[in-house]
Structure formats: C-alpha cells, structure tokens
Image (tube, rainbow, N blue to C red):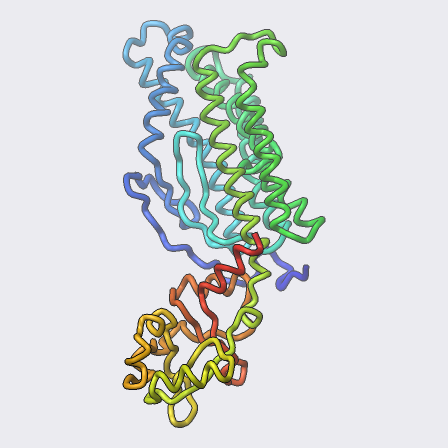
Length: 389
C-alpha cells in the first residue's frame, strides 16, 4: 500500500478526539493532550494490592503498624505509574503516526488507551501495539538493574515487585491474541501478508480465544506441570482474566466479520427504480404511473425537475386507496433534507456511516452530474446485509 507521506505522521495535523469523561471516573492529569482517567474499580484493586503486600512489607519492615497498608497502597500507585507509562507509549506513538487519541483509562485490570481510528497500514498497527510491552520490559530491565543498588528493606521490596510485575505485564502483553497488544501485533502481521485487516482481526481473535481457554484451565493443570497447588485467589484471578480475554477476542471477531460483509453493500446495486412526478400530482395517479413503469419508488420534483421529496413507503401503504385520488403525492413524502441524498456509487462502510448519521427509511441516489439514479430503501440494505451473513 502506498504511503501518502513517507514520514510517520508527516506534516498532517493530528486530529484531536473529543474529550469524553466517563461518568464516575476521576481525572488525574493528561499526557500528550489525552486525559488520564481513573475508574472507581482502581481503588478496589489498589486496596487489594495493599492487603496482599502487607505480610511481605511486615516481614522486611516489622513494626510499621497501620503504615504497612499505606506502604502497600504506595506500591500500588508506583505499579500503576508503570502501567501509565505503558499506555502513554501507545498514545504518543499513535499521535505521532497521525491518529486521534481519546482518554487513557486506568482500571482494575490495568489500563486502556482509546485510539479513535483504525490503523491505515499494518506497520502503524504494529508500532502502536508493540511499543507498550516494550516500555514495560524497559521498566522491568531498569528496575532489575536498580535492584542491585537498593538496600534490603521496604525500598528493595518495592523495586523488586516493580521489575517482576513489569516483566510479567510486558511478556503477557506480547502473547499473540486479541485483545492483548501481542494480538494486535499478530493482526498486523496477518494483515500485511493477506492484505486484509479483517482477516488479521479474525485470526488474532481466535488466537485470543485460545489464550483465554489456557488462562481458565491454568489453575487446574498447574499442579501437574509445576507442582504448585493453586489457592482460591488464583482461581478467581484466572476466571476474571479469562472472561476478559474471551470477551475482547469475541468482540474483535464479530466486528471483523461485520466489516467483511460491508463491501457487499453497494448502493447502486440495491437501488430501486424510481419515478419522478410533480408534487401536486394525485397520489393515485402517481402510484398508477409507478406500477406501469415498474418503479419501486416515487420522487417528487419541481417544475424544473429538481427533486424535493421522497414518497414514504410506509405512509403510502397506510393511505386507503379510496382517498388516494383526492390527495397530492406530496402529502406522503419526506422533504429531501441534508443527508437524504447520497451518491449512487457509495458503498461499504461509507454507506453504513451515511445511513447511521442521518437515519431515514429512504434515500435518494444521484449520479455525479446530479441526475436521479434511484432510491435506496434502508430495509433493502438490512436484508442484503443479513443475506451476506
């Protein structure tokens, strides 16, 4: 695929995504123009981390009393600071490549960066995805090096916990399965080889489902593999992570399957033949002429031939036949407002976006010269989409 600008991002201005504060979240700052939000669930996991760390802190710094839990909470903050670096790397690289980024969210499972647009090239997908785990591994390496210089005690425990945790996060996120970063790397690879981003998503999504199953089964088989019997906490963590991975992988697969069907939706192929009639023509006469011309839709026009309205099929069918001779066709039409006129060649995702932007039962399709081609009925689009499923 040709690169419109050989430099990453080039001179193209980065489109800023609108800041959307999720209800209940707390803004703690911003990075590269993106708000950093913390969900209430983070405080629960931070408290859990403080509770789990308390025995280890007590072992290296006995006699702290209630400050033991304060130290544990401080470790949670340091740990999520490293998670924030991971997410910030995604945001910075995405913006450097010209993609708008929304908020950076910290939650109980880690973090998420809202890159608002699909990658244009496989290499963009690769770099946006891989940079996060690389930063985590870099933090792990730095922490490991510093651990040789720190004295035994609380600081040494925090440094050790930091590098071990970031090593785990970095390696885990490189596992090739969506919704993990490694899944996006796999998606980029399949996309680059096949030339189809949706096939990349499907392959990476199925890989993510396999990873989810392994995570769910791990507590049951780890005793046979490493000789360690899991406790209840490990089962709970495995279930939470497994469900998260399965849900994310399934969502990616379903979305990709939908996108694969979109190219089948071509407005020109789905259009109904239309008949143009004066707005004041009796409705019965307009219907008679449409049946004679084997037209599936009716458009009202001015005396100069300019389209001004679309006959609403539902309103027409609801009008009793004995009243139609005394009603003007305009009484069952919808005026052609902005968004109701589409180019006849529109298709795929552009067609779906246009319909979603201005929902309506019918749309007028016009040629590049402005002449009427036909009418697109939303129910016909829905039927064609289901037929391609």
